[in-house]
Image (cartoon, rainbow, N blue to C red):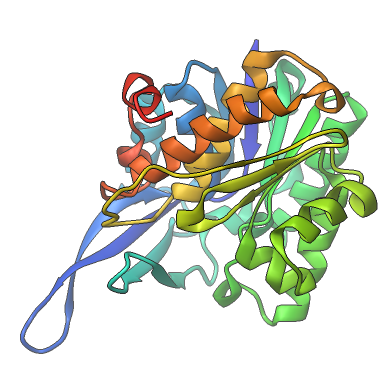
Length: 315
């Protein structure tokens, strides 16, 4: 039995580490893509996972497959395509460790996944189906994602969504907003950032969480607040968790690690979403906030995930 299956992008993050005298950055390559980071956190914290996606028949594609296998993620749902390259992302940082992005994805292998290539048997085996909006930017992966979501819903799976706004990958902001709103309407569990709440509705995190519950039918809304922690809310309780004090060097993947850590704790509780108490939300939120914060002291997404024992020391 698989706990969580995710569909989405796999890519290589090139992160700037230094700059030479001419101003050119020296960059380090790390495995990336929000769904992979999300699943790796779940695996690190005791859950079984599988990935649905596509990489290129190239060195980076094989590196990603090896990394996911090493993390314990089932990779038989990942297709390898010799007609297109694995997607690349280039990440630069400001003094606070916050990122800006550019992408080599015109097209990237992740955008070429078709519905016919989706291994629905992995969805059948899973308790939870997770997706994000970066698999909705282009065809044919947009259709594949929409059909996979419908298939998962028809088969009674818990639907998890992370909107994961990356405006450089969209033709325009309106297109991004349209697909994000569609995604939120499909979901039972949503992990969303305060910046994404602002982008969608121009409101506070508290108002955004309430909107997700009342207008979108979400069962559990989790709003990340950067260094200020997170807000979790369901139909009967709310909880705000703080983060441990850290010295961030790279925030890449922190939100994904929060999401995977939170999902791991949610699955441990084995409760319906509408039965979660304030104590349950604290159990989820405090651990996830600590796991995400501690990851920022290290470079990369998957490589930065901390052992459960260390996370527990900070909650």
